[in-house]
Image 1 (cartoon, one colour):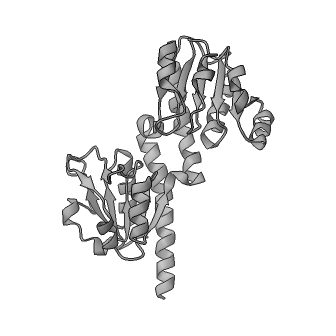
Image 2 (tube, helix red, strand yellow; image 1 turned 90 degrees about the vertical axis):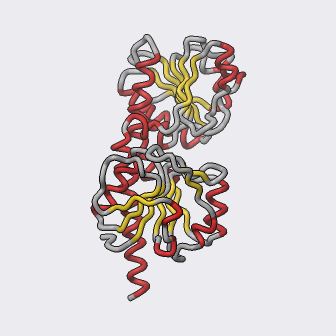
Length: 300
């Protein structure tokens, strides 16, 4: 249990509601910042403004999946309050305070480091990424069905990247009867692609392998769908780019050629916010419980 542990949940979307429910279940003391327009009442959680928080009592800070902007602003759909987290807020916390965020950027890393606090990027963890690949895969299937006029069965699918998301997506399309090619750089990944029954493509040979592609799904956070590659694609091809912004596609050139290309990061929070929130909540609660046990052991 997290009885008495003071956790500040700052901003976010519907996924954070599952985090709040889990923290209440574990008996944590919760301050909600950026939730003043939330109609749902949480017994055991208190809505406050950032300026009202006594950070000297905060033992954990839970930020949204997006973390902060490059200026420190935190997005929230449940408030119009402009929330900016800065170095002074973190310095006021106890030394054992941990900051949890889905992803991070230079601003967040800099202020956490300056305050000498610990930053945990949940989406860098294998368990979170693998769990999240499930709603990502389902959302990708939905987008392909909605934006094409052919069946997935017997269609020609090219997937770029064979990490945690790429593997789940490839498996799903293959199970539905698609002809699946997977492009990757590393030889061990290409070997795994072959072992799982997909056609492997060396990434530097991609331009030679896309001439008959119906759907291309990118998971690589680098410019891999260049103008050179796009020039070899049929204009009927649909591109779903799952990589984080700005994606791995030359969207300008794709539009010029008449290829429909869609940037779709963060699908779990769009197509299955409850499940995505539960994934974050379960992993976060385990980490908080581990930290609490370590603190108690050190004090005993």
